[in-house]
Image (cartoon, rainbow, N blue to C red; front, side, top):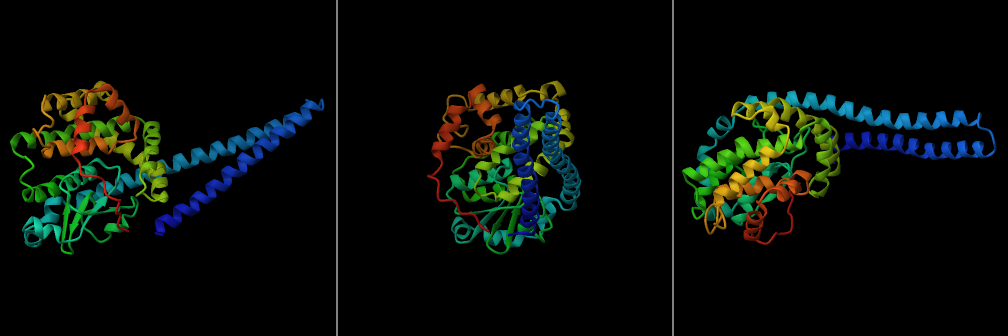
Length: 351
């Protein structure tokens, strides 16, 4: 177990013991108060009532401490990640690998002869964009769930943003669009082109950002929203605890200080961003572009189809996902694309 896992385990055990003590103490004191009251000692019941309130107060205090502490750590992590992300760009990181990339991606057979690992977060839309491309093209790969605090799985890698894809021992592709751009020439049967590029850009600049804003509209929304990660078996329990207590404040800060300003720059107003209506409108715009065809790419999905699919499926199990399917007409397209995916294989998660 990692250092982060052991640390969180200690914190969780301490919190569990404190909450369990409060939970056990409260009913006992309530029963004592009832006994006194039934015995006719109304005046004597006041200390028991106060004790009950005290135990509940302690439990609430612990909960508040966890949330406030998580928010403080989240703010620190947010500023730390911003500094890390600015230190090396994807272009700079990839520039030094061009010779190795040409060898590793010389042909489809060459690609498939090497071990491929996808690093990232299971619930990340960018991670799922790459996953959708790999799965649709039946490219064998292992998933490496990265712990969000120390990112020990990519320790020593100058570029720290995720997802990342390693091919063999010498190539590490970064940035979801770059990864797909490097791999897609080996699969020319998947349509690309100017119109597809427009929609792929729309996915990054509007769809993903509207999803982030919808899920993290308030701190409470962000905290509640992270409950859906429980369905991802690839995420260790201590990562889930971190994401709920610390990750939620980070995402709230990202949505408020990064995502919303970027959407305002391209014309969205705060009033539009305060409801899911803009998200629904943009998804309907995509459905209209697909039209009467099975997919945007026609009889088969193109790169835009796979990108939109990956982003939407990243939300599966989240209330925003359920509302999106009920409030828009995207479901038939989504189900067709899901049916076009190869049968799911047994999950293979690299440790």
